[in-house]
Amino acid sequence: MTGLGSTMPKLRVRGATKVYETRSGDLLALDRCSLDVMPGEIVSIVGPSGCGKTTLLWSMSGLHGLTGGEVLLDGKAITGPNPAIGMVFQEANLLPWRNLDSNIHFPFEIKREKPDREWIASLVSRVGLDGFGGRFPRELSGGMQQRAALVRALSFKPSVLLMDEPFGALDSFTREEMNHLVEEIWMDTRTTIVLITHSIEEAIFLSDRVVVLSPRPGRVANIYEVPFPRPRSMEIMATKEVFDLQNAIKREIVGEQKSRYAALQALPDAIPAPTH
Image (cartoon, rainbow, N blue to C red; front, side):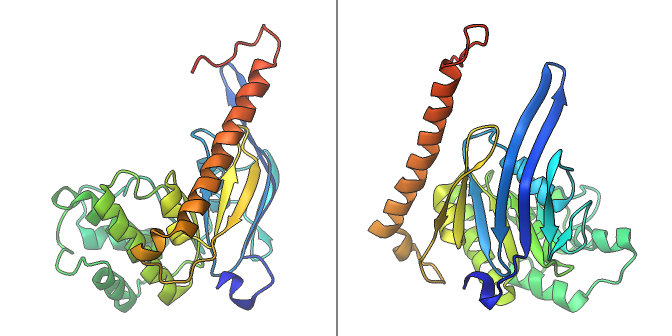
């Protein structure tokens, strides 16, 4: 499955470093992160809160520039927003004064391009939103809004889809439904996907590989292969092998947090250690 026989990465992150300037001084968010994502692969990125996951994802999208290093798409440096990259955010970000159909078509209006209505209609049907085209966001549930955001991101057939914790605000049942939906669409399209998530179970269910970032400044601490066949049923997710992988990833994250805390405690007294 991984790479679909290709040896050239779809996305290549090389030495990604990001420093934010704040009132209290420079903040190193990412430190020399390097990662390859192969064509047709789903890669999840997990790690402690504040470790730079979203910063890394936004750098891949071209929405945030890097202080050092680079991100390449098909061997070419990403220097700004790229039409080949779609993105689904933590919030659906639907315009409240537009109905569902016009929200989905909005990117085409901005780019002054003609939408592929047949493709969009197939996506709308696939995510179960048939008959809701005239509804406004306030008339849709959170899960329905995220389905619409997913359709909007896929509507222009991106070669890469970046997802920034898109289902974190949903209830567990709806989140599980969305995970199955993403897997089904991926199996049809083989779109390269990079997903940020706080759920290790979600990462394992969806991914070919799970990347663990260290506490800030974010570095790649470890990468775990997910060997389970697709489609992945709930029966597979209840096996000992999955639990063992979950625990290994959890131990990696906890171990990185403890190492970071120990390093901070070893600093001079002039720099206070964390209180919690």
